[in-house]
Length: 272
Image (cartoon, rainbow, N blue to C red; front, side, top):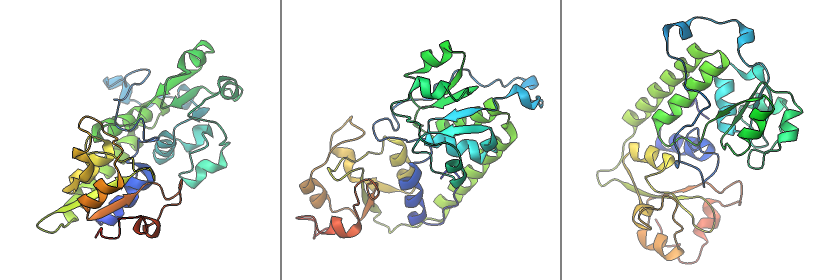
């Protein structure tokens, strides 16, 4: 989740593999675009003054697991009336209707809920919703930490939780700095392979998750596979020859991969 206290590389790995660092809802879109919102947050002095509750949306539909987590983390959970099928964190999100699709959103199904704000990662149906008078906020996968912090602050401004959003950002920055400071690596460093699926699609240091690994001084074996492609597909021989010190599996739920299934792959028995 977004708010985690990391005390080891293992804890960071768990963070990456469960949330892809708060903004990565699909491997295809992760780290490829910068935030694009309906309106930039108002930073004028008047914007910091408390506003009546009814000036903020009270019927929010979130079609982004990342945004759903942020909304609950900043205290806007009570304003959420429905979420998409993959918004399963925090547990309270599942108390809301959660059968909407974020990848193939249905305008009629969303409009039937009579929302006053719809939050999405992809703007594909934004024009149709706005034609119906429904406000839309677009938050693509964060490409950097600054993108992530900016989106949290923008959601805070949009929902009337500016102070809570600022507090969340500050706590995340503190926790991440502490985690990096506490991490220790052997003098020669460590290499890693991050597996997105069993067909050996991976990610490079140019992605958000790759940047997080980089904070800890880890070296990505995929960086030289296909220059310019942040999500290269490796092959078994490439990984075996690279012999990474660490293997991170992002396909344990979708594809039931495990350390045991990986160790049993032909030619991989020599990987440390």
